Length: 245
Length: 245
DNA sequence: GCCTGCAAACTTGTATACAAGCCTGTAAGC
DNA sequence: GCTTACAGGCTTGTATACAAGTTTGCAGGC
Image 1: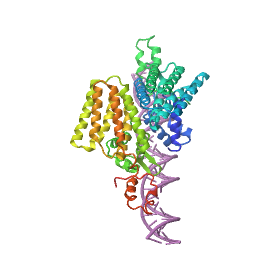
Image 2: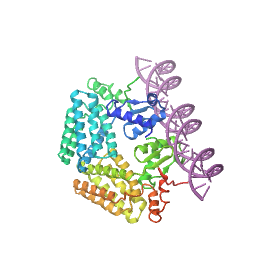
Image 3: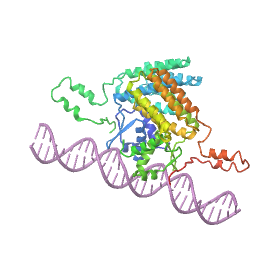
Image 4: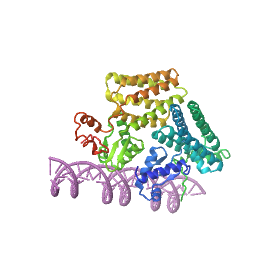
């Protein structure tokens, strides 16, 4: 709504949806203020809005960080998506031809991006399918909710997803659209449930949330005398791999 | 998260959920700042968070107002609630005895409030049932989403609901819990769908969004000469009945 | 009498200043 | 050599000041 502050918010959110910002990235107020050519005030505005939307978090007097959802939060996010997206498909009565057309087109674009090997845009597109679906079937409110959830699951995938199976996801999307086309929305809902389940099952929730996890595995099995507890006990509240500078 | 700013946010949100703040109410920054004993900065923080949550709105250089959802937005809110709440009941596999117990207790409290005639708390309790349900079955994420939605539908009810049928709602809640107790979650979902549908059907979406609607009815039928168009044409962007002072 | 134009009061929008806490690196002590 | 204490720099937290726009009330002209 505000001229520039909304842009900051949008810019960061869409960068996250596109996978261009990693979870844990630090977002310094002054740095963003310089970048956008405004004062810290506006940046703080945008940050607090994004915090409300569950996308960033503030660590007192240390800075703003893109959220790194825990394993528990990851489960919550996927459960929530499952609830909402299957609920949507089951609630809807009928699907207009225009909607079907636009969904088919979206899936086609997905396929094209995958075949071209356009890695950067395909992750964005795969998430976008769900946003598109909510937009087509539901309403603006629902779309916004799903958008925020998708941002979250995108970050989760970046943290916990070992392999990306983009083709499979796109196939699932295709099947869902096909079921909708056949007018079998119950089937579409079931397929959506399975689809989200598959993505969730493809995660490795035992690793990664902090960068030390990798180090710990590197040290623990080999040398396991008295120096092991020293490293993990440094408590590390919010690790953050700063990118620039 | 912040010590006091979060309290402002919470205070206003729960006041809305309890029906203690009317839609369209103006929330002046300075006034709230004085009230909470902080500076405008913190108030603005809270306001912007609430705006992100869809509870208040800012009108440029005029002030913050509790949202007055349009008829269209009302429909969206109810559709969204239907999607999420039926989706939740259909997604859940089984319900633990502890959850059932707490839901039964909640319904009992509802009934008590209704029989006592405690109007102020019963509206709050009726909305709270849904929040409670999400909390018991789902997760924190889902609960927060439903909480925001409930705030919205509470405001909608205050604008468009001619009669409050609290008993019927409480009965519906009872039936939903009974279906859950019987393990028939599909039935619970259907009952929830009907319940939300009933509440929505009980609205009069043709009236009220602005206070002038009432005036117009008061003037138009009786005297319908040349003075009628003068009042409605003052365009009134956001009326707002200020309460205090 | 009614309309128009203007000015004062009030409100939010934005930036800036300063306070407070966190992190890092360095130097002193054991 | 290793640990501990401390200082400096950096970042957010909060308040305040000023700019910009909106509303309201009043006075003047028709």
